[in-house]
Image 1 (cartoon, rainbow, N blue to C red):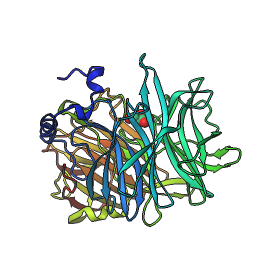
Image 2 (image 1 turned 180 degrees about the vertical axis):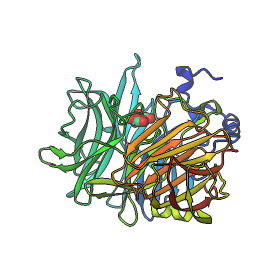
Image 3 (image 1 turned 90 degrees about the vertical axis):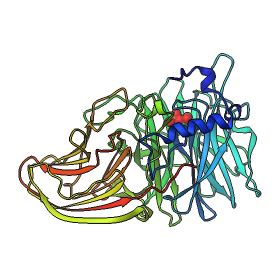
Length: 497
Ligand code: FRU
């Protein structure tokens, strides 16, 4: 196995041969965990979604990419184009680490349109001779001929006074005719926050406005990937804090991502808000970013993975994928996340069964598969607890368990097959706000995304079961549950380039 020395991690794509890349690609293609309808790297490691935008009638989705192995090395942006956020065409590398400012990684950032021109703002990661980090925020512009031009020197050359070099992931938005960039930062006292810059024109000067004042003054040591937007008359701040200790069933993963809702005053930068709520209650979800779709809906895509974690595909030379797009709304003061309506176009063969489940674990119907969307309506529930076993075989199952009295919903991957390490517990759980009546579950070769009660909760996880683990089973602890189950097969749409 490769020993990932610093030299190897910072090797550039152009220093490899076409042959070497082809060999890497061939090895990756042999993996039995390749996804069929999620964005995944053809080689190497994918992380944060970047530069999401609907521009001139097409969607653009990029992501962080280290091409040469399943480690966090020298990062590029790799881009896709799409008509619908479901079917994608490869565009290839969008941003290369080819300036002195981003020589050690083209880190995360966003896309925005200004007077008909497409721009990107991203973090340039540079290491000095002592390997000290230097972060700046750069702008790249897409010229009329489609060429991407980096505008140098950086729009924001260094962190503001009072903050460390952990200063990254600008998300640009427009408000009242002004451009703003919200950026993840770390105060000199090593606590995390988000700061705001302002500009009249993307190519003009970007001035520091200050820090977003929330009541979360001591909430982790770094906030990555902040995103700000208005939704249903409210201000929403999404970010991925690092360094939050677990609390009962909350904050169980190594790093978190969540949101606060309230009102942000753009003069004082004070934000009055409710509690921080996690966006996802599964195992693998981080660094999400949002965009506005063609019908003006707010849509979010996340990285289905976490930093500082080893995944079972690492030894195959690839890691991670992006989540399916989710449409956001605020209902009853909370963010709801529903699968984007275009995902319906993935549905092929449909099978529906009405039935009941009791305490005998059984396959209600001869449903089998590794890639499908499963819609479960709970018509009537007299059971104390219900269990759905997906990707099940004699010795494997990914278990979704619902306890009626407490409305506890649990995802257990103890028997899911191979697990990412370190294993921080094999179950994640959450209390639903309302009794479980609806589940929409997207299963791909090595992932599961569970949407509960029309977007009330989502649990997203990678799973690494055997190919033979392809059954769907249901049981109760006691009592019966009446169900309507609809399974739509999904045939692969995203093939490797
Ligand atoms: C989040 C993150 C970002 C950074 C990028 C580097 O996963 O650490 O803060 O820009 O990944 O790949």
